[in-house]
Image (cartoon, rainbow, N blue to C red; front, top):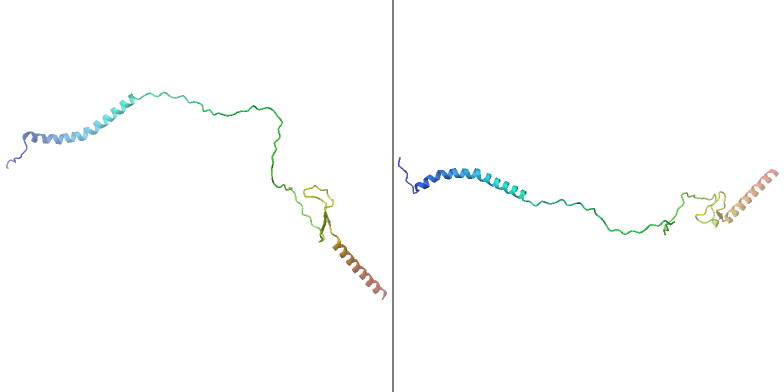
Length: 149
């Protein structure tokens, strides 16, 4: 074989294998060196940090206005608007159909049992009674005439 001549000098030729060795060394040692420097910086910062004294907790307070309380008899007064309804309600109906002539009580008034509440107009009823009496007398007359025969 023929010797290969190159333009590299002898010192450059000997440096080539070192570069390969240096590249591996940089890949392994450089990250470890960075981690070591970071850890040393952390420890230095931790050792030289300022010591903070714990602050005593203060009780919260608020301004309030006060008055002196004296014993008195007081009653509340309320002005209210509304409707009051009785707990019980009665619906009253008459046995006959008639107009109301007079109301003897007021709404909300308490009444006794058997008390007169309303007066009904008895004109229609009186007319009806006279007609029934006339019918009755007519039937009596018919009975009397049948007995005579």
